[in-house]
Length: 306
Image (tube, rainbow, N blue to C red):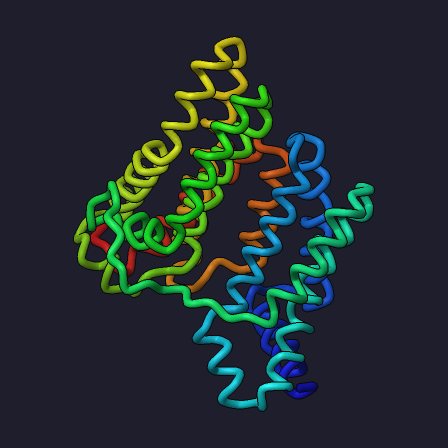
């Protein structure tokens, strides 16, 4: 068990070094970004505590995937595997529980802690044999495949919108469509194989334009029921709702460009820190988007015709 966590520590340090950072500096920057982002969320969103809990549990669900649990079980005995999973969830929940305690949400922090431990005892299939229809075509594969993986989130977001209107809580409604945007962002985290870029046979500029346009269109389709409902019941808050909608679209553009700015590698700590600071201060997007766009053009030149 100790060897397993030592190996994870070495692998993490290696990824930080590959990003061009000293591991200690990388950890400090990640902690700083988490604290600043958490403070911003609690300042701007009335139900931030639920977002913190949801984020923590969603990350832990990734660790509880059946394939991963089976892999651990093939190496360690059952008792050791359970200890590893409990310790993993414990480590992961520490920052989220700490921020809840700091904000005096002691009950929520306690619930999150015990849920984290209980969740470690179970494993879940990440795939279903059921083919779920999507409102998207096959070419922008990110939304087609991503929607099938996360389809259960959208009924939750739409239900939260209905609840928000019934209890007259606009903040909850805004949280609902931010949840849709956050889910959409997750579709662009991992890079596709180079073949799926090369087959476009376009210039880098046209390729990026197509990717961004498809993402904006598809994200707008998913969030449209929420936006329309909020505008109908809160017409006086039109500017605020529209502002959050535009910021959400800008973040989708940013993540897509950040993805291809390091292609064919994965987004790493530097990109995460930049995006994290832009969450804290959205006007930074006006500088970050052109920066990532320029880097993406250079990265894609070897695959696409200029």
